[in-house]
Image (cartoon, rainbow, N blue to C red; front, side, top):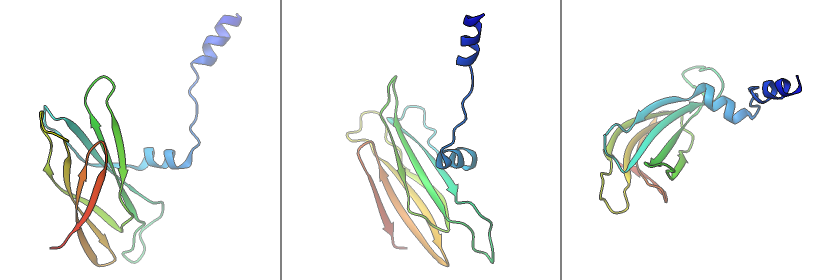
Length: 137
């Protein structure tokens, strides 16, 4: 009987109580994902909005998380985070690296809105660094 009790306890599901993790997992929206069949890097862009409701056309701030991963049995992976904005949107993938490229880097175009100001950004992300540059239009 003691053996059975130990097995049942080891199959219990534990509750996660870390607020940031719980909020993220329950509220993220995937807004972009690489889809090519033979990339050297893959990426997903996830958007999360702070708690709260919109009031007078002002909504809680948003943040984008850019997840970058190589392929393989034990892939190296990174996660980058944008600054807060009133609204973030994905524009396009400017470049998705292919096999054989030296220092494979994703180039992503994003758009943000803060109050009435709209800004465009070019993001260069790889497994070593991220470069976040505002683009004038």
